Image (cartoon, rainbow, N blue to C red; front, side, top):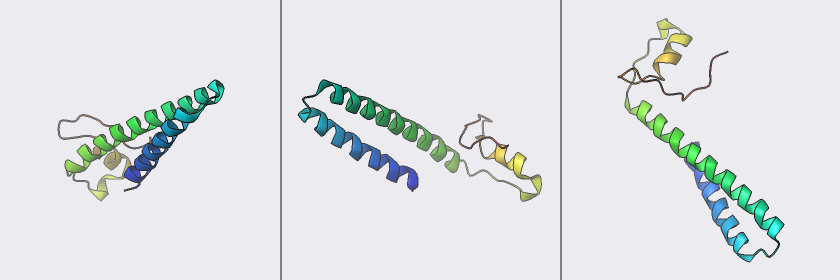
Length: 93
């Protein structure tokens, strides 16, 4: 799955940045790399959260009816059996 591949690449990059930070002597460059690492860590956290929501919805086995139309089915696939809505899709324009 694309989501897991990008997460793995981000994690590899974070490890590379950590190694780089250990050997940097320039404080300004160290700060730049730390900001970059923090940004990647936030993206990893967002990916994990999205993946959990997506997995939860996939396990719901939601039935859709093509006769209901796109907007109604779009809403159905974002709500679980308890009618809790999970924002896993971009809004329809």
